[in-house]
Length: 227
Image (cartoon, rainbow, N blue to C red; front, side, top):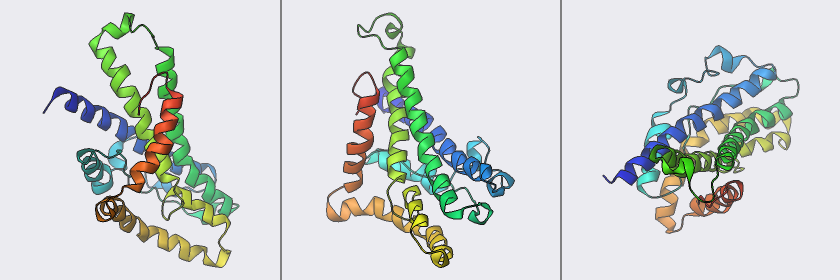
């Protein structure tokens, strides 16, 4: 395997794990601050990646996407929460749902700020160091893109993605329990569609969507083009 491919895989793993972990922790932390102790009691406010790994979503899916030259994204084990603890379950559900994507946006912005702080148009000084170059040219852009891919993917208003939490404001209260039940079982079906749909229709709408959103935003945030 070429050295560039090894560097790409290493940067992807080092970007993907914290992006997923902090995404899930943000969900649990938001729920905890709103009065729901479920995530805290189940140990899901931990930064230990082993607490959040899903064998398919955290390991197999990202590897498959890398091999297919698609944007790398995936998922961890969903953080459990109980909207019944919230003073306003509808608003609480939206806040918890958007907390994960907000964490990913924050991490992408941090990577961009570091890139701007270290930016050297002449590529002199520290950029002459190979290790720093790997960090600056490979890792920072990859870290930002992985977080932006996760953010925009999860903002799709399709159950059970985070963007579908907006439905909690629209669905009559008596139907909310059924809606939450559908969310629990819709994710595996949706992820199968994400992987198989591009091959069945010979068009990859998810790759186009992520390029148009995450890719363009990444280019705007960084001092150089990253996508």
